[in-house]
Length: 185
Image (cartoon, rainbow, N blue to C red; front, side, top):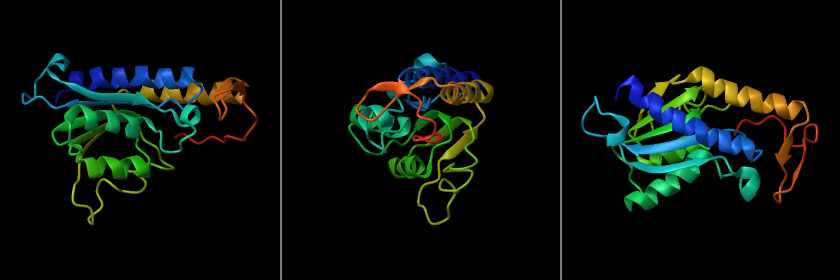
């Protein structure tokens, strides 16, 4: 696919990340689309299979990452757990859990904006390229990286300055000074 195609869907993932931030969730957004046959396709030619944002606090579920929720939607839309010939767009590099699910789902290409040097499933743990795994998606890194970084940095700056976050159970309270740490998942 071309850069304009990837940027279009990363902007959509950024809008999902902004929804997460508005809900007090770590702002990660994800969109999964079917790849059109034409490599010069315009975004209107792609079918969106799933989109989501982090909801771990809201759902009190450690697995409710944007990628996991978008994968579930895509499985339902396709009627199949195999998501070959798809592209997954996510604002921040998938964690090891999400990277494993992406591999199992047979996603064709993973596109992310911002590397995660601490917990990145691709860069730090090499899940996407591990020789013992039977599927290796293509990787595209750094798409709209600056905008993706800005969303994350702004979110954690607001938290440090006392901005509200969703506490377990859905109550909006001021940041508690460390109970929720600085995890970026």
